[in-house]
Length: 232
Image (cartoon, rainbow, N blue to C red):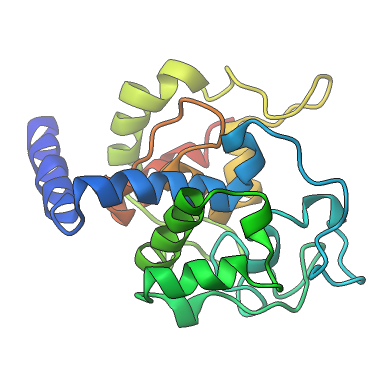
């Protein structure tokens, strides 16, 4: 059974990977991490001033220069998981730019409304544009009320223990995402925000060696989440 899973796993990954080029794969991973937190990717500090387009009523001004802070981990903005709560801004999502022209998206990123041309290079903006155009997806396997992830936990466990555990530990507690005495480990983070975890497993965490799993398909990521959400 395990050998059958491995065969199917690589078959699905090959089908998915063939839909994009080698160069696009590189740019997608980079763009997704820049979307997450470009400062960590570039190794620079965030601008001191609040982003001029961030609403005065927003509660996360210190993160206002991060793309995800307005548009959300699901890229749906006010229509997605940021439709309410502490991250609410009322700003729309990026659905209109799915499969959009890369040069058009870059122009928008450089516009007065976004002003990213002043903090990122053209090649970085292009990477974000490729991510926005090619990688928007839905997450029907995440229950928006319970935050539980539906997936094959057995398959997810096989992948987690063979790969993720090298850094996160077999129980997911080798890396604490907070500073002691606070503790937030893999299971805690996924139970709290599976949409963020979905993004980071797909594309990696900015400024680290965490690999990107998007070439293996969303189902693979859902399986990893399904297993990892129960790590205590």
